[in-house]
Image 1: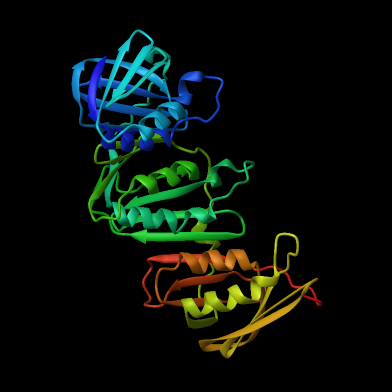
Image 2: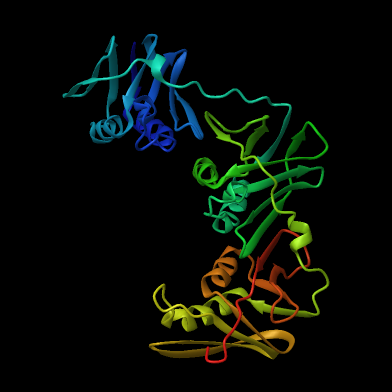
Length: 370
């Protein structure tokens, strides 16, 4: 194999493919990047759960393939001068030239690299890259890290004629985002669950643009196609929470507030709370005001922020982190809060009455001295 490629293009491709490389594995090949020269230059990383393949323009002088250690290859390309890189292989011997720089390293046969799964494209959709990235970032924080329920370590994707819904749950909170699709193909309605770790990489390869990303749902894997880059993720199997049944309907208390003001008040009161000094926020929703208080071994803190509406003095305890995560995920300036009782969840919804997002935070039981 022999090819030449601009250093900047090769460095970007190596960086993208490296995101799916296994850091440490009993299979040495998946700690590397598969480099293939055939028509164009293609780089692949695959950790058996997530695979990323990206193509880059290069002058192919001799076709072939090699697996290179991802960390070493990435460091070499990063430190090369900004000139054309020439890579040549002779069996497992690899020669990398760029300007006056020269490296001779050892690679691995491409036969040892596992094949990426094929994904049937009968069910799929196209969504704006920027919207998909926003949906992922706005729900990923609520993905569970409890391996006893593997299905909840990913996010549920539901596609139908009305658009795309992404949902994450972890037993303490729920995050939901809805957006319109550019195009939908296949069944009238279909769904799948993608691991959170894979979605974190999808978010990175999606650009802040209105250009489309194609998503194809196969029987066991999901393919995300973005320009010259493909990401293939293993689907999680199991029964996802029936989230619609978990969301309270017709909450008796409805309040409206400024998101930044709410964040600031909670942030100030939470200063005396830490992982070592845990304490719930005591929130009192009154007429036109939210009073927030915390009390730990090092002292107490309180603050107030204005709200539109009357909470009737409803007192609820919340985890400061869970409440703040939900407020940070709200991109709007204002939010609608729906509440029921001291043991019912709090809902955060768009103030304009739309269904673009929904965040649900479960309460924490308060003790008399908190």
